[in-house]
Length: 106
Image 1 (tube, rainbow, N blue to C red):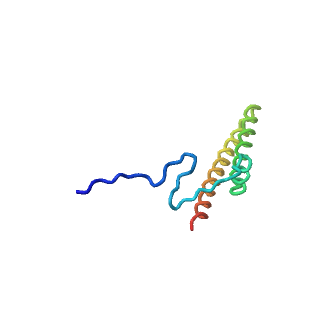
Image 2 (cartoon, rainbow, N blue to C red; image 1 turned 120 degrees about the vertical axis):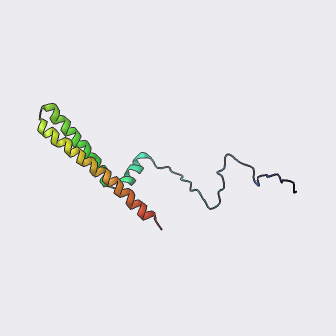
Image 3 (spheres, rainbow, N blue to C red; image 1 turned 180 degrees about the vertical axis):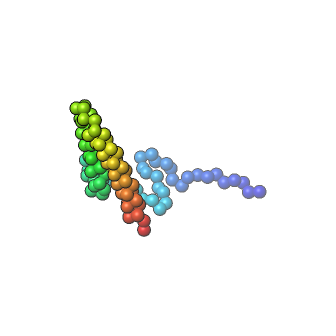
């Protein structure tokens, strides 16, 4: 029976350096993307999502205003419009995800 060999790492672990993984090369960004840059990039990728969000917020705001003024019929219409705008926004998100998944396929 053979004696077990001691396993020693070929290279000492250095916490200041990223680990070496075969087949993987990390990219280092010298300028990280801020909120404004990311928002603009995401809006250009899928412009329907911010439009749907603005429509939802506008319908909600106007519906609450009508409710406060006592126009219950118009308030109900605006709340239904808000639901439609939310549905539009969710559909835009799902379609954007599907499009980006299909685009990333080789």
